[in-house]
Length: 444
Image (cartoon, rainbow, N blue to C red; front, side, top):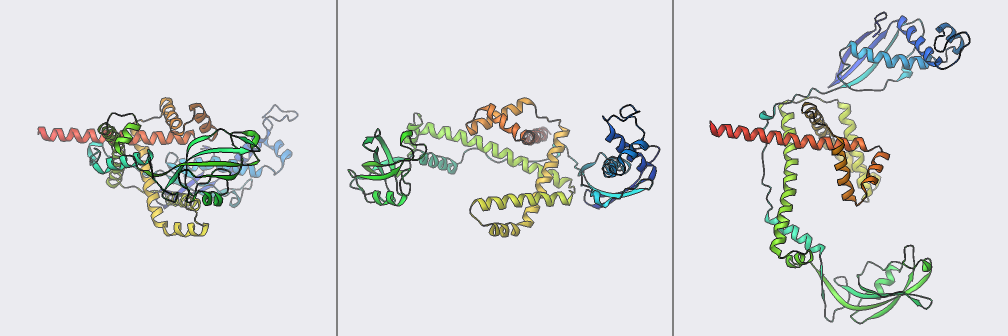
């Protein structure tokens, strides 16, 4: 703040964590800021008779006239707003400053200037000690229902096909066929052991004609279909041309879920008991991860309930609006019209706001814990995240890194990693504190 020309600033609370700052700038400070604006504009320019950046304001005014007043106003508002926040004791508490509408601010040399702006301040998050937080624990062993569901999923993924003697093709069956493509007397190699079902036409064939030709066929049936050789066909010379497909039905089959013993065999395991053991181990690991996530959520809610804090209402509204837009886009992608999606989102406005408020509460608590526990994201954490993403997407790690950097997504990834580390840390600390307390209680 200028000691020679101090400003006057007051703050008025306009809502939870929201303040309106009123500022009055003396005329001398206005003139000073205008001079600075002219000096900034002249940097790097050669003005006869003066060294670069040393021309007096009076000379600069005669050169530029009033054309730089708008620039001076922006320059002044930027500087003065920071001084004003310091004057009212909020400089280190500001979460965000709302944009100032410069069109409502009139600046005139030789006269004082008054303007107002709004800020959101940091919520006052108070953390209890880990020993003051209790968290429940739920069983993570694999239940019989989970094991049965996992076996069923694996069985569906490793289907078996039984021959239907004297069967005909319908919606409940599939046809095991040999396929040969033909074009002007030339034929492709025979594609053996393909399975055809109604409703999934051969690439390049007419869907209705495909179903009509296939319906009711039996083992030993043979027929031809007209086929257009489209982009991606194995013989590039035939692409864009029309030929035929010769189809010989070998068997009519019915798909079924593979039994546990068949799944075990397909996976190279000795017995279905070994398969069940492996599945139980995997389910338990998943359960443990989900339990940690549940415990983290429980801890965050407990911390808030112990020491509730207010949030800027505008921030909650913006978070809820963004959540509503995401839901609306998802519904439209699933086939809903824009109007239908909008109506559904409108019905959920109150719930969206409540959920958004909880999301923000958790975020600020996590941020506070991260600061208190000095949790950081290092390059090793980032590299591990990139490797995990690359493995999930089946991509090269270098390509994933390049994509994230090109899309400016690395900061978001760091934020996700940080939140995950904080959640894991607070669960571990609370569990250890609870265990220590239980031990002390037994000793007592």
